[in-house]
Image 1 (cartoon, rainbow, N blue to C red):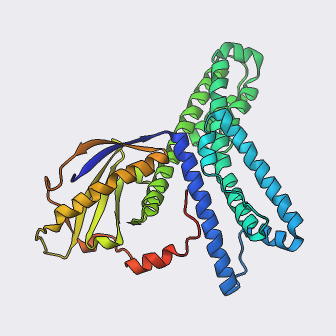
Image 2: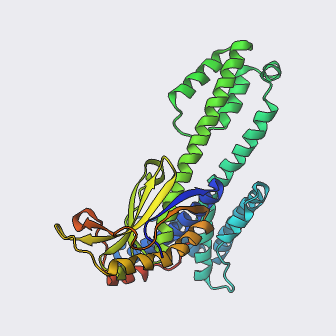
Image 3: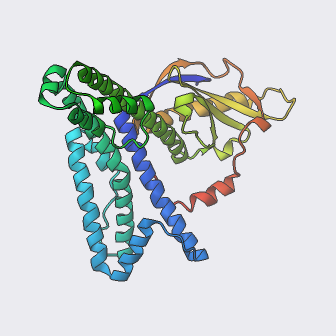
Length: 356
């Protein structure tokens, strides 16, 4: 039995990014289903690229469909090979869609759609991780700047360094300025100094970019995991793990109770506590408060386990007993308004597939 609980949130960045990629792929497929329903209902002229390809496959026949399927499976096999080199193939195969057992064309199309979406989301994550590891090896081999400068021109070294951040569209001005100066330099001590500083700034930029991506992925994973466990969840800001903030969630049967998660970005800690929605001026305590805390206590381990499976580890650092602190009363106008239970059930019926 517990009341307010504080946890320290940690995790493997790569595992978190891969889990978020799998979630986005499943969301893309779900959205494609939704779009297809709208097209059939309203004859909407707008279609996604994937839908257009699938429609074209239907026109060209089964051969075209099989050709697209072969390409998708080859692309996926290449990603698996890359994942094996990195050491994360288990995370990739865990989200692999199940191939159809028969020759039903609709099942093949569904499988193709899922596989293409997964490849689309996983590829940039794996390529960036592969490049990051290659850069680390390159740094070790290029640590001796004197030897490096004798072997190559400053412009060649600049090209190698900029290749590491080719995927970043807008470079910070201080990096762009260093690049311009190195490009104009002649071989020598100044070029060595500029190359060394540029290498350091690029590494710092890449680390900050990965940290940003991981924090956004954590927010997505938290929201989707809560939904998968059957909770109603207010929209989770993608900056939750960057700037901190509050998220409320509940089950439709909880009446006026909900759980508030407050994130402290500075410490990496999150606090979970049960709250009760009240009207302005209402401050009466209820015997149900204790039961609400016990109920959440029994469910909390399932949330921890589900997040752990997606790379987010929560270590309990503070645990109060139920009733040790009174359940916080919050004026209902300051809390999110959740849909009624029947609306939730109606919405869930539209979901054709469970997100990984």
